[in-house]
Image 1 (cartoon, rainbow, N blue to C red):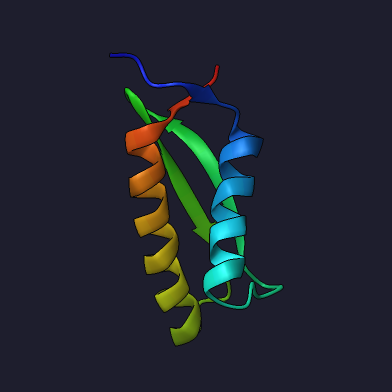
Image 2 (image 1 turned 135 degrees about the vertical axis):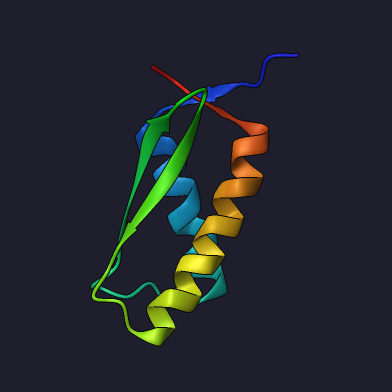
Length: 74
């Protein structure tokens, strides 16, 4: 069964929304959804404090769950 597709912007917004509910969204943290082989992945850009590393893990977990629900719209 084919999954519904979302744009990069929609997926990035969904990840940010979940993260804002879970913790403060730091101003030095940025994410980008990018195509990767047959699926999509999220890239996290930050100054990389320990707190950002923890947030990065949370973002990856959210992306893993969303990847199971949505394809990336081309």
